Length: 345
Image (cartoon, rainbow, N blue to C red; front, side, top):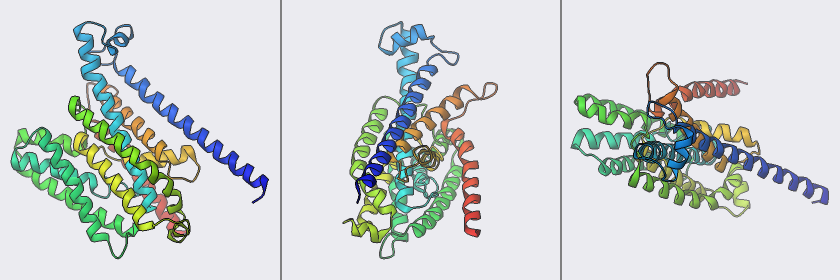
């Protein structure tokens, strides 16, 4: 390889790193800016001259309650859950090489919702028991997809088709469970079908943050293998990788991220589907864009929660999952139409 070629490759890589860094910094800045803005919004808003000191524990009891006990945990929960969904979506799409391979479309999030709804309606559970049931439901859905899709190896299209079937099954079982619930239980489980960060705080928020941090660190060595997998199994084997092992490990991390985030915040729809697409377009380096997908996911979840709480007409409010669903559904229809046109050409 000539010196000129090596220099050109070095320039391309440097430009890609700088672009990734810029996207990450802008996304993180947007999340921080939105969080600071929320301190002053709503009927209980605290103006900046009081909210900034309250953020560091200085101020009267009302300011500390609003800033440190209400707004800060909610914003942090939206950011961390968005990171989990965005990163999981990027892992699924890059590993399965399918832009429709999203955990909520494949039934992973639906399995978590089914587990939570079953625990509440069927057994009257509450608190951490419901979170554990949601986590178990997501893992059970993933195991079912794996068992039904595995045929001497992991094939992307079969995995997606089986996952869509599992998603429909989970949706039907959730509807059946909801039909058995009384009015009080129906209100309790509603958030497990749409996703919300309103009540994520204290120990639950700490568990979510620690779990996502650990899984993100585990993703670092996996990220190096994603570009090789994108070239196909033969090229990956030529580079010394075991394609099946690498795909299984990446999907396991993705499932764990979705299970953890959904067990705490519910199935925040379409963040895992939309974030990788936006991240890949922003970075435009042909890679899986795992880091940028995580940051974009955080910004999307944070923005959707702010819109749902403070930007809807009248006095309406909506959980974050409803807002992301309203944004993500048209994108999914556009993606399906675009894929269909490509298939016909």
